[in-house]
Image 1 (spheres, rainbow, N blue to C red):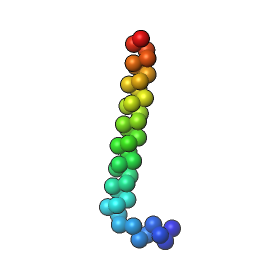
Image 2: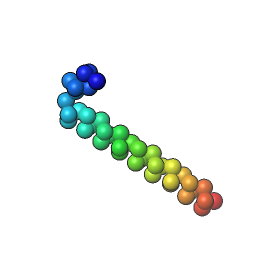
Image 3: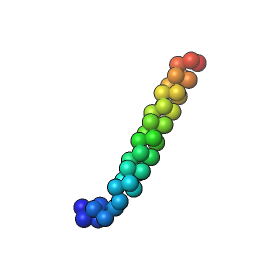
Image 4: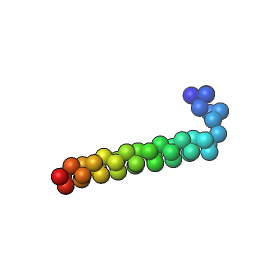
Length: 40
């Protein structure tokens, strides 16, 4: 845990933000694929 204490807070927020964006993009992609399959 001491290793994490040395990481700047802005870097943590950047990582969390990009991770959140990636998760939302993946969910949107899955929903889009599901809707595409239903349309066929």
